[in-house]
Length: 296
Ligand SMILES: [Cu+2]
Image (cartoon, rainbow, N blue to C red):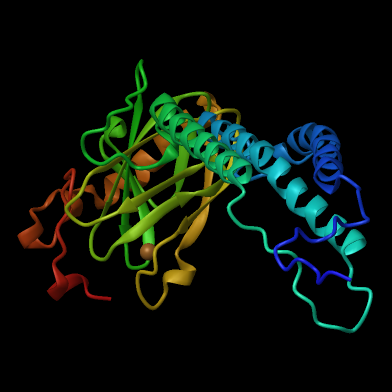
């Protein structure tokens, strides 16, 4: 009897099931069902909501990314559960599975698949950023400036509160942020001392507040509502208390609030108008820290 040929190919497995095809079919079916369901029923639950045009756009972008990632999660789930079911060890013996190396089909598919996803997201993200500024501060020279008239508000952060100045209302300063509904708002975010971050959550706005920098951010408000403002940059001991509510109100309400604020402001205006060297706080586009007076 001849000795077995050591170079002979191993006997073919008696399992002739095409596992790859089964996994792909299950994956395609699951993805086709799950992706639209996730996009329709989960997408709109993603923050920040639709209190502003920027918020709505962010939800749209997040829904797209969720829709793209759903088939990837489906593939992982199918692969995992199929593997658990079909390749479960049948004995206690610790045996390596057959090695999977140099499968050029998988390598090419992987490179093309991940390359297409990454390049699409880069293009999609850039386009969406340029569309509306995405609610982020663009620095002193914005590149994505919305057309039409804008209502300006200066957001001044300091340890540990935000105050707001309204240049079109005679530089009225308030610790309440009131915004007119359905208007294009131009926020000028700056700081008197440390680095803060102005985060108007439901409006989809977040912009760094740096001393000496006029960080411009645009937001198009929608209907009346309440939104939360919070500092999103660790800025010292009472950072956690640096929040309040802002309001988007209709134009009548905004006018009455504005005239009320003007009356209140008239009392402190002489003090504000003094030069800084005399203890005043005159309006400026940027402020530089004066630690001897402002250190918290
Ligand atoms: Cu802060």
